[in-house]
Amino acid sequence: MLLAVVRETCDKMFQLVRYGRWLKNLKKSQSNLLLGFYISSTTTTTAARNESNPSRSSPPPIRVSLTESAGRGVFATRAIGAGELIHTAKPIVSHPSLSSTTSVCYLCLKSFRNRITSEAQGVSFCSQECEEQSKVFYEVEKQADWSAYREYCCTQGLKYPLLAKRLACMVTCGVANAESLDILQPAILSPEMILQMEKEFTLLRSAFEEANVTDEQMAFLTKQWYVGVLARIRINAFRIELAGGLYDYQDLLSSAAALVEAEAAVGNAVYMLPSFYNHDCDPNAHIVWIENSDARVKALRDIEAGEELRICYIDASMDHDARQTLLYEGFGFRCHCLRCLSGD
Image (cartoon, rainbow, N blue to C red):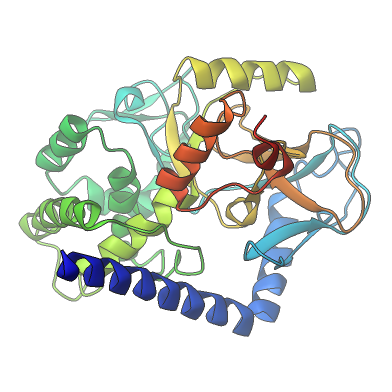
């Protein structure tokens, strides 16, 4: 009994030390990080900066900075009106859900009208452009037999390992950095979670080895890397529900809510800037996906300059206890927004 208490205490101390190191590294690189976000966000908002005036050129009205109690956060640099498109973002890595592999584009997750099918694994692309862009990871991916990995994910009800597999393929091809997700905050993993990830890792590495991927290409692919990537994917991945080409703002919100209720996700994706938005059960911003995995962040209400922008990580219609339980188990923290503190 005493040993169990000591072990639990040590685990908690380790988590605090790890978080402290992560926060220290974040502070140390903050100035370079903010510059990178500014350039990246400006690039991704070129096509959709202002829906009423597409030709207008201006950076997104946000900055990333440290909050008093929740790590990093996103803040408005000017007043933002309700319904305004704040910025868009392309995913660092994305993957269709196992049930959607044959019905959406294997790269951008767009639902099919015209499709280009790859005979290697029976996947399809929505356009020649997506097929060309996918070559950066698909040339390696299609060489391996992923049947055992996919079957394990299917039987265990896992979705995030698919993102880890794709990122591993991208790193193996040399088009992504093995540390590309390191800046994102990791989830707290239980020993049981890590044990399950070890099984996944073994299947993943075996698939690469059987595909004759060289040791040099796989040098990054260690158990530590795999667990670290999944720890970040678990807390930063977004579930993609396409709004189906709707452009009226209220219709977008209604459609997104209906899709969540119907479990109609077409896949999952990890983004850089959207991952820095903190949670609030009464959010002032919302992320929608219209046709593909390109994320659009919109204002739910008027937002003042200097105000932190927050999104809801979960279904805000849940009661207080259910929200708190899901947040604690899924993200490792309890919500401190006014709605949760009041117990509404």
